Every structure is written in C-alpha cells, then in structure tokens.
Length: 232
Image (cartoon, rainbow, N blue to C red; front, top):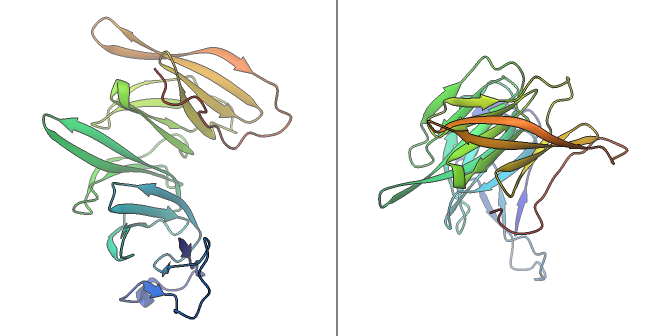
C-alpha cells in the first residue's frame, strides 16, 4: 500500500534523487501497513491512473505528471508541460494491428489538453486555447473516441481532432461523466444529471445531443460511477 508525502510549494530544484523510502522492519505488519513512501510531487496529488501491470501515473496541483514503477516505487518519468494544476487525467489504450499502446491524456487549468507517451515522456499532441478548463475525461473504447467535460461536452478522436460538441452550458460546467449503454453518456452539471447520446451519421460523422435531464439531487454532484459493468 502506498502513501503519498505531499509537500508544500517548495522549489522544484530540491527533488531527492531517490524518491522511495522503505518502512522499517520494526513497524507492525497489517493490511494497512505502509510498504513504500513515494516522494516527488510538490503539491496535492489528485489523480492516480494505471498505465499497465507495471506502471502507474500520478498528477495534481503542481502541474506535473509522474510515472512510477508499481513494484519498486521507482520514479520512471517526469512529464512537464502544463503551467497550472492538472484537473483531469485518464489512460487511453488503442490497438493498431497487433500492437497495443497506452497513452495518457491530461487536462489543466491552463485550458489545454495534452496527449503523452509514457514510454518516452514526450508530449505528442496538445490542444490549447479552450473556452473553459476541462474538469473530467472519459474514454469510449467501443467508438474509438474520448470525451472532455467543461462548459461543453466535446468528443475527440485519437488524433486529438474535435468530432462534435454539445451546446454551451452554464458556468458550473460538467464535473463528471460516465459511459452508459447505447452510446449514451451521463454528465453531472451542478445538481442535474444530463444524458447525452452520440449518433453516427452517414459518412461516419458523429453528433451529440441531450436526450434527458434528471433533477433529483439537492446539491452539486461531484462523482458518477457505473454499477452494471461495461456498457454495451
């Protein structure tokens, strides 16, 4: 089990060369025993994403993405490029022929979206000058697209090309999304849950439209989960 040591906003030049600290043998062992302490971030860590069986990534308010070895806790890569805090992160796995590759997609308060190669640490694609900060990301593997939620719901292909988007919503924007069956997406907007449907028209052109709105919550919605397994 990993515990994060979240430091203050100290200078980045003071990063320790060995970010892994092993807990002493004298500590009583139980299900919650800390095995390693990973150090590397300078502010609050808000996102943890599994890349594969051997690596995961962390990101948060310092604008950094760090890639770690699951077994040893070694910091493998430090991905820099965002100028403000990271507001969403997800892994995007796609297959080309017999090859499968996993990338990282990040969103930031600097109103950019970035695609990263966790093998090299390179930023492969960037979308800048967005109308609003993106608060959530969702990959729709069956359609080979991914979705960003901010003041609009935007649908992108794996080449970071915008396919379609919903109409502008109020300043509260979309705070969470989850995939539903029949090419639908549930999006949390303040106290409402809005159901969108993606439609593929002639010529493989995507469009998105609101089909239903649920208004039973009394306060802002911060999270949505799917409890019925993978949508079909």
